[in-house]
Length: 326
Image (tube, rainbow, N blue to C red; front, top):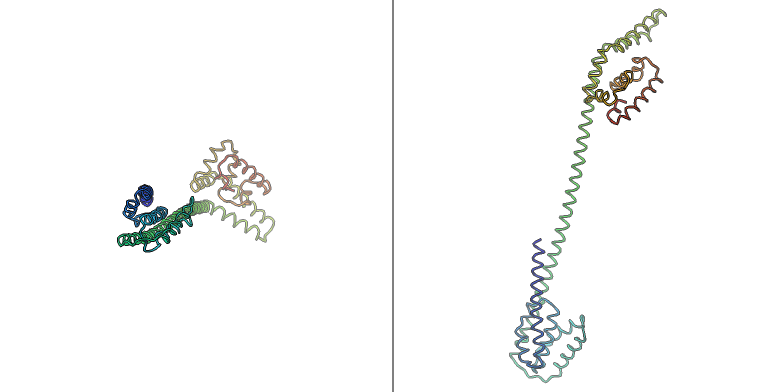
């Protein structure tokens, strides 16, 4: 912002200075025909080294040379009229180049008188012109360096902004990943607690069932013995299925470890049948299909159909957490 303020001040100052110089040159142009001595004096009084516009310099050089010719004064060199010719060769407007060439021809043809003061003043103005060129070269270099610095600062600022945006995106992704990881860890912990609770509840009963089943398949006894083992297994399975205390412990374990899943399911589906609710509890506990078949007393193909209907009802309830039991 400060750079732009300084730039505006410089431009405004140069504009005012250029306008004042242009007025002085207009006055000198008028005086060349009326009073060439006064015109030359006015042109000598202008500090060329402080000018900032090459067009002003070229016009001053043309008028100064014309004033020298009008006063029939010899010019030690043709540097000043050469400034005008060089400028108007590239920026000719309305025959000004021809006018400058005519002034130089007049200077060459003129039988001029030598004036040491005029020659000294001429050389002084020539020196001022060279100082002007050096100053303009320095200023161009300064502006070029400033422009490069501003451009570099803009590029650096843009790159830093892009890096900040990337860092913010990366941090957001890392935060999301950390949140997802925490959610997964919490879910794993909940499932682990649920499994531990269920194993603690059902360990003694299912261990007995497993032992009986193993005895049943491994036994080489009589048909009467095999029938007795099978009857015992069926009795134990029925005891587990009918034991309301064990079922209640399953419900509590699921609700404690899965954020009240079964309570929310009951509120969302108050007309859910007892059989479908029991099936949902067994599914939420993570029991296998064969185990659930034994507990509810149906075939595997029938259980698949019941699970399909239950899945459709839970999906229609609009709570995605219900679908996690499958």
